Image (cartoon, rainbow, N blue to C red; front, side):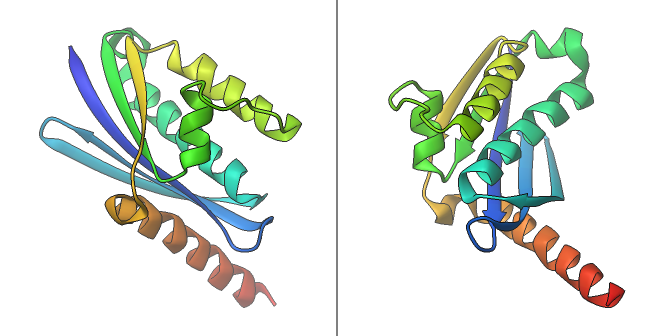
Length: 145
């Protein structure tokens, strides 16, 4: 079985505020990084959107037929999101419920998906990418005015 590691992070400047996501996808012998500005969101929304972005990227890169054979290990520095995804915490906020359901629907397209909470220091590359996307969007916006 193919195993893929995903490191994802969402960043929001202000809560809510301008937001971005950063992800690292590691397979045996390969490492890909992505970042994207996602507009206005809360910290928790950005964390979910980062994971959604990562799951969609993996599916896009490997295709639907291969994804059914893959095991994913997802590493996030958001303890809240991980505990919600592992069914240790309820998802009470209505605006977060739709992201939870989207992650759930995306995850059933893989053989296995596990979620792990890690310290921010172990997620520094995804964090750097999210902040880089925020910085780039901020610079682009300031040039417009």
